[in-house]
Length: 313
View 1 (tube, rainbow, N blue to C red):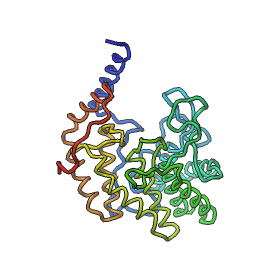
View 2 (spheres, rainbow, N blue to C red):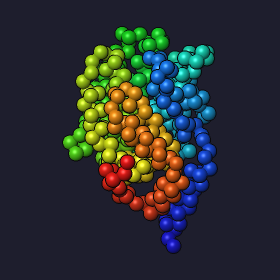
View 3 (cartoon, helix red, strand yellow):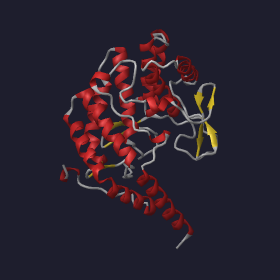
């Protein structure tokens, strides 16, 4: 057995053990959808409160991220998730406004002139966001964060509007949008063929927030309709693919897909989201089987497993 194959097998078993242990860390907290009576313009669609307690290093009030556990950098997605969590904590009556304002300062100061927030990945580092690439998910989360900062009064509408407008424009540019079978898809990472489902939905929720903020309903309808068309491509029977490279979801991302379907169902009333929520929730009952398949996929790098989406209900 080659050394590389041995490493793949060892990694596969490590991942399988982690999945089956059920242990939860900061990066894999479940963010449940808000109930209708909990919905507020001051907080996000998912309960992000757990993200408001960052366990790692902080600098000037924002989380520091260690890529591969060793490369120190700042990740806008991590910072924005922390900020959205602080909004939950503030909404629950906790005294965290100072912490929230430090995150807001960082986000305001680190938006580039073209409207993007870029990942501070050291030059030469191998990562999807190296080289100044733009993330549609980052753009969407930033819009969602800024509109809520306006709602609670820590940011004026006058200061927010040009930032949000620039963020939306960049998110819908060719820097973030790809076309799949002619349908527009906002990419979490603008890497050809990646097409990560949860990242695109977070971007879409940011677009929804933008249009509520400015009082228009145009682009969201286009991208949301495209998502409905593309959803079957993310289905593996009662389980889901993480991306269009046919990477099977971990249990964490399967649950996240279920929760995001709930949010989209609440926002749009479209029955397809209710259907997929039920199908993918049912898959969680048999998660052991899919976890084994995913472990095997990691070992053998099988990327093209698929099932006919219309043959399972």
